[in-house]
Amino acid sequence: MGDAIFKQRSGYLGVGIVASCGVLTPTQLSGLAELAVAVDCRYCKLTTRQTLIFIIPENRLEDLRAGVTALGLKVGVFGEIVRNVKACAGNQDLCQRSLSDVFALGGELQDRFMNRPTPCDFKIALSGCQRGCTDPLCADYGVIATGNDTYDVYLGGRGGSRKPVHATRIAAGINGEGVTALLAFILERYDALAEPHERLCNTIRRTGMEAFLPATGFLDRYRPPQENDFLAFAGL
Ligand code: SF4
Image 1 (cartoon, helix red, strand yellow):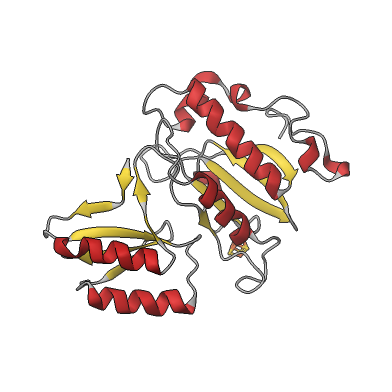
Image 2 (tube, rainbow, N blue to C red):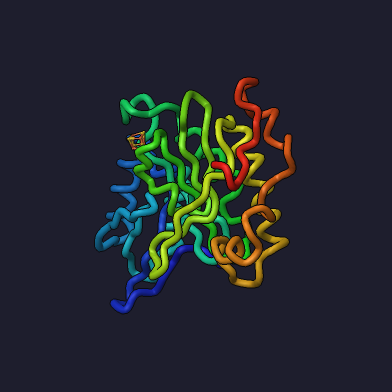
């Protein structure tokens, strides 16, 4: 694990920069443009995980770090940790289909969990509706809004490999507080159950999903009264 700073074959450094779910204020955007020029950035790349990569000379790294911090942004992280959180254009300004403000929830999850050590890399994706533009079913922990501050949670997805895995729904109709509480629970179970370097989907395949489900009633307080039945793993 460590900062997302990679020496490239060209001799330049690729430095990942993280905003809150890929959202930049105008001040941050213009500040990044000035910073790119100031650190002799060759070019910038938008990534699929909603980060930005600056390609810079090695000797400009500390200037870039200082500039990124001054703009309220972060250098990204990689390795066996919780990665930056990906959220779709799901708020009322950006997508008319959005059912809930997933930016706000995604930012909270990122602030609390990003950089937390895990047995293998751990990816989180949130979508503002069932269209799932951030591929939440391909994330270790996927969240899909089903109403205003109401979410379904999917566990154990994996994309970007030779054996992609679709996540399984483990909770329905919980609020953002419940999404956070369930994530904290899942990460503790993952720590306890995984072999070293074992991706969550492989741990689930070895142990069964039941080993990752909280006790009946755990999520009741996070549901509207009419939806207080915990979703049985097998029933979906
Ligand atoms: S998942 Fe839904 S709310 Fe999010 S960008 Fe796609 S269509 Fe919009």
